[in-house]
Length: 246
Image: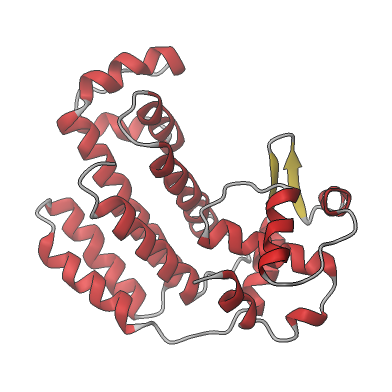
């Protein structure tokens, strides 16, 4: 979904306050462009794409939003707070699960050979069909992450273990597949990227989807809408599960 299509879903978008527009654009960048963080220049580019006048001083406005806990920021950029994500999500229309994503899930179900991945996919499919979008995001992440770990274990284990002490000297090497359970997903992703096992783009996608998974699996008032679950499942399917090389 492009930015114009996304903002067209929000009633009265052109008339709302600049800070709210920044929040909505930030949500789009997180969810549809897999941006872990964003800066003023990226927000300005989005205003340009929408043919809307840029804020007078975007950086200052974003800093003020961070002071009010609407954004979380540091020298690396800004990201939406959980409460801001939830507020923007509530602005989006509730939609019926699209047939396209259901078809993708069913088709993928027949192509996977790993028994554990088949279970994850089957459960993701059930969750999505029945409107349990929070659970669907979690199961889709489990499927994609298991796929990445299996690639590392089957094809790149020596490279991963050689890189591990360089980036995380206190981490134990992977000897058996279940050893992945003892490490944080973020560490596995970072080491795999450092070892050249996964590309920078793949690492960005995984980090962005891990953030959404964390929001989905931890108790919070955040609403996971069909559109969010669809984007997570579609992105992980096409850019992780179906790619020959990560």
